[in-house]
Length: 491
Ligand code: B12
Ligand code: SF4
Image 1: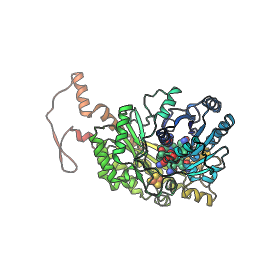
Image 2: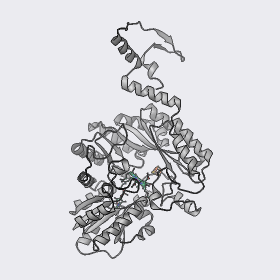
Image 3: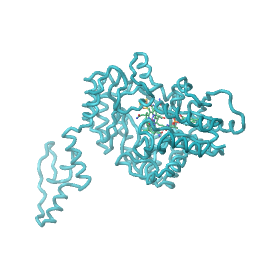
């Protein structure tokens, strides 16, 4: 029995977009995981990644050529249209193909998902146990009568590591060069680069995000053991010689015990590769010891959902942090030399222009290395989605607009021309920050300016050794004039 998984992620960048950014150059851990589970059970599994194809005609031809018995598609809300279209073509080309759909939208909006024609089975929740079981039933001619199958929760330490070759072999066919298994996206994380997930779920309760994931993964966060994650990293080192990696976990830094053990074992195993992970402003501030520990182990930067610079809005979002903590988190990261990837939203329900400006000013103050602004988008499965439905606020006409891209109107009552200006203005560095960054880059590139000057003088023959002078500092301390601290402090 030939099974093909289909990755439909073209809502953002369209067809033929492989390697153009993170959403076009990363593997799907969901499909990778159910593929590994099915292969472990003896099934032959292959992939069609729509991102690698040139269009629907290409998909039709490729599907006809491979003629699978079973297909499995993953579906976020944003993937609804391509999933529907792929199913229609599959059914037309091969009427007897068995079709299975899973992924976040199936669990979060089951009724809506059931409206998609040409689906034989919808699998909710997690698929590692139920997908191979369904394949087994189909292959033995015992097809279940019910269309909806409730996915059983797997033990994360018992399932195989994700099947990366499912994606990498497929991408290779279409000319992806594979200098790096997945596309690196920041200067701090060089290729070969890989992504990894240590657990599922999040203990927090932000209204624009929850309770969605509680429905998919359960209320309690489940994490793989540190040993299990280290073993996967060992294999990735052997196979891909990865130079950096990133954790996809919603909030890896929340579990002090896990993080401590991970950092110790990561170093003990001889890993030095830098990595990024997600955290929260309140955690960074409250657990600076963990920040320092992670930094020492190789952490190069945090993704932080600052979201808003206005306290009323932060409370409305149930973000569980304060504006002051957001600012302080920026300072803590800077102090430890960590890059900041700042996630924040504009155009939140009830948000006024003054409140938007609070966010703009906060972001300019934090001065992140990477800006990731979004226009608030009501996602099915979240409390703020329900709020938008109840108050007739949503402007989303099409599933493609579930992208969080800050380019199109999402809800009523917001001035998107102003929000577009605010989005751009939030990314303009203040002159003081620009100078600070330029100085830091200079020091990184050329070292201490005094040494640099000395080198130039030596080269031009104007260098003369001077005795070290001492001068009073504002705080009363003494420091050799021209010493390193004078230049590096405050950079
Ligand atoms: C990593 C990630 C990304 C990455 C990579 C995505 C990728 N290639 O997989 C990036 C940054 C690119 C991304 C982008 C987006 N993401 Co995202 N992302 C995540 C994140 C943090 C982890 C995904 C993951 O790997 N999870 C672990 C795997 C194992 O879980 P899974 O994919 O759900 O798969 C399991 C089950 O769903 C099921 N299953 C899945 N598929 C199938 C198929 C079959 C046949 C079966 C039987 C079962 C099955 O079995 C799997 C194993 O148990 C999740 C949150 C989360 N913790 O899951 C959000 C999440 C999936 N993303 C979300 C969103 C909204 C987006 C964006 C739309 C946001 C945006 N910026 O516009 C884009 C859309 C990109 C696109 N396709 O165009 C939402 C989806 C909500 C929804 N209603 O659909 C989530 C849930 C976050 C949230 N809480 O809001 N994302
Ligand atoms: S936004 Fe982040 S911290 Fe908040 S509930 Fe979602 S994953 Fe957790």
